[in-house]
Length: 98
Image (cartoon, rainbow, N blue to C red):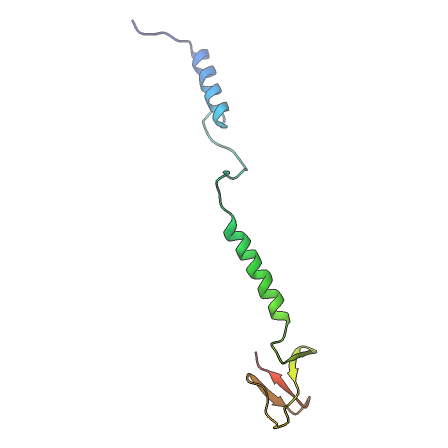
């Protein structure tokens, strides 16, 4: 004859195993914590990159200065504008082209 066990004992053993493993009676895992071995360094780098882009977007490159919503510079003695800019007669300054 085979080994006889009651249904209650089987359920108790199953419940104990699933409780130890962090599951419910059906053996399904319901957890909101990430595993401890996950690496979130990519997320940190991504957030820092977004922050750097935001800070750099607000500044004008050298030798330009922020004037309203434009980056402007005075013309040199020879009458040339710095590279990447164009003279604007409206403001009598060199305006940086984005």
